[in-house]
Image (tube, rainbow, N blue to C red; front, side, top):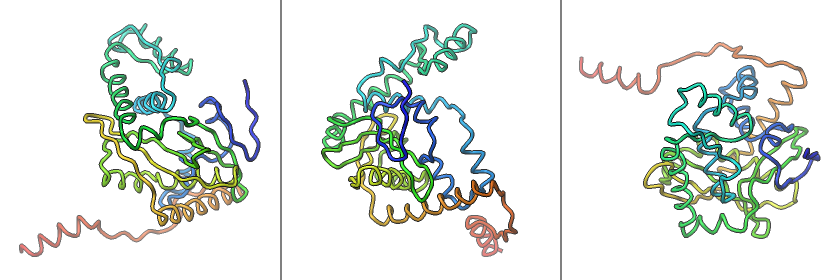
Length: 280
């Protein structure tokens, strides 16, 4: 079934491949465009490259199990201990072509078991568990902002509670580590981008929470809310990204690094040199 989206629309039940194929700048593109250190030539290449990585499968499985409660329609079991044989490779490739995630016998222990442990930890958490009950999973958003088509996909939408919950599966759920990830990976920009979409479509700005789960033992879980300053900073980054996109697409010009950059030493190299000078 093909779902036709409007300039401003909120769509339940849209398959992930259809969402990804739909027009609009998603949060990953916005984060790329909002980084002034990335040239437009590089940004264009990054936005057009769709390289599949096995680690993405773990995230997809974790999201499906926690958000939707089942992997029945997502996993293709491969009766092999590895993908070294031609038959196993062909079965793996066919699974991906069918929109499924292949899991061989050895990966039950290395992939499925940790994903189930993450699910159990999240659902047992006193704050996080109730956030993944009574929600609408994987809700697609389409809107226009500053003349640019945009899109987003909400993990867990609670329209009756005025809340959106975003699930992150990370190396660490320690709050100090999560803070670093929010900054380094631009999660705050993603949050503001999606909140803009909900506000544009519904006229209401919901509360936003991150639930983070550690991907390895002890599978700890933590819940986070963004400071208003972080969301305000994100809006500046988003406006910058949209401005760059409009300029590049209107002129079909995607420049690289055209300036002359004066370079000093890194802070670490300066410290090392100062220590040497002090010893001499």
